[in-house]
Length: 323
Image (cartoon, rainbow, N blue to C red):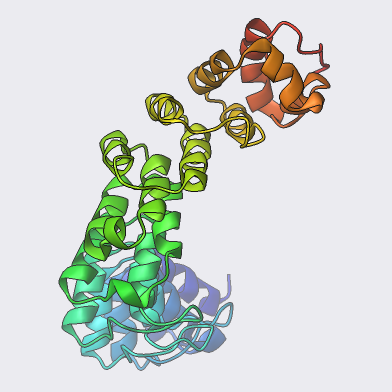
């Protein structure tokens, strides 16, 4: 193997002694645009990074295979010790990412939920209000959208402004099922007071039965209640679905989306509950194409296989299908 390729491999695996030996034998530390340093930082081999820097590797280089600097790579994977070393050596904490977005290191660490790395970056002056293509508040938005509760809490404790971000992060956290993140954002953002319909829908999505029950005591738009039913059904929250139906959520006006969603994602108990709430005559007339098999058509692959027995048992008139 070429000596330079050996240096790349040794740097990637953190073999400090071998890296030192290869450099002594004349391996090119700048080979492939300082790839040895990028690979060592990517894998969090702090001692190897230190050696390469001592031997003259370029701290500000970007890897050939992508636009990521050693600092950004270390932040992506949460190698806090490596991040600290790179910062101590002068790495640019405010460097832009591949999309020319400033504060790339903080955005990456936040997006992947590396709370210790985020704390270190904030301690060293990273801008907590940094913007990306969606606007200001990018660190909080990225952490929340990926459901990283501890990172979200840290950012809020450090002064992140929830008003800088749109509602996308709240909906995204709900879709991921991050109950703690959703409840924290609802509390801090006072969504219950400012947007109770949104609060209801996201609470239903994550299955917060008590929160939904409480919100239903307030004036709530019927469309939001119906949407909450669909979201709860799609996630298989049967008790919540039952409560919304008892409250008056409409399965007829929903055009059977709740039933389709529950079946699509394999939630047998929720499918059974929804079908039990239909009268047979309603099921035949709400949409004629249900009788033709479109409900079954909506359920694909293995999910269809899991549901077909239940559906046939609960509604004998469903047509036989080839699976």
